[in-house]
Image 1 (tube, rainbow, N blue to C red):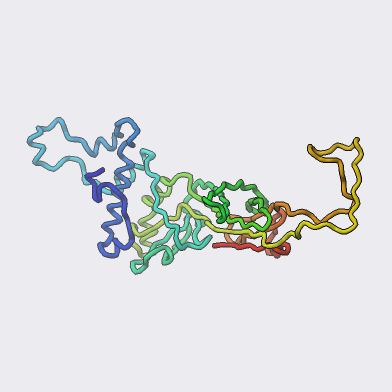
Image 2 (image 1 turned 90 degrees about the vertical axis):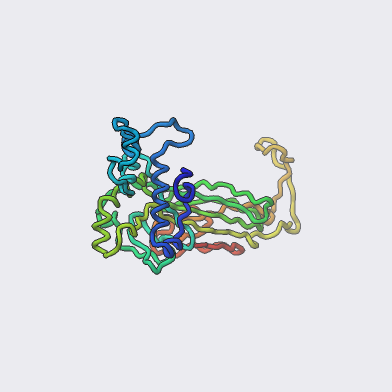
Length: 323
């Protein structure tokens, strides 16, 4: 790998393309495809028949004579390397872009390009969606993941959240909030192709025709294979519970011995109730990977249907819905 450009490392930046054409992009593809053809560091040193044909030294010829002549193997192209990786089930590489993309801006199957004058995905031009247009059928998977933390903890430790399914393709997240505490959380919803190689195979078969239809270069096409949301939220018990207080003229009686009592209970019971003590509260965050769904906090794990108003939190609760 060290014999490859840039020592076999992938350092693709779009700014390099602006200065040097598409040289940087081609090099990054070459490095990635070569890695897919070669065995991993912890795998046995074996090569597929396709790779052997690329590096065949023609032992039947005279070594000295063949040294000065062009090999019989035809000119190698990125397309050939890509097909070899796909056939060997070794082509699962994608390029990721996470910064500055609002939730639901893209859907899996969107195909488009970034114009020459564009700098990042904020300039991405969507030409269509290959799934919605019925051009191909990909197997899709979905995943939801969340973590919670408190900025007051030192050191800050993120704890995983367990999602639970609700109707209308929504997901619920429960969090225990201590009195007067604030809890921050990060929720990620993602939809992605089960096999990235299927996307590459589709581009090899249909990319040229799609590019010609929209008058762009085939190598400029970008197919979205993984999309979703990555949002920050917070919930703060600012002052939701009254302080512990006694009412005047409270009367205490002894509980009869035949009634079961919790361990450590003295048997003394108050006849007149007191204000409730400060207890932790369970709050629910409702999210969804469905476009158009507005996340919300609730005191109850229920889904609000359609365009109905989101629940209003009790006095003293302050929340944030991040994007």
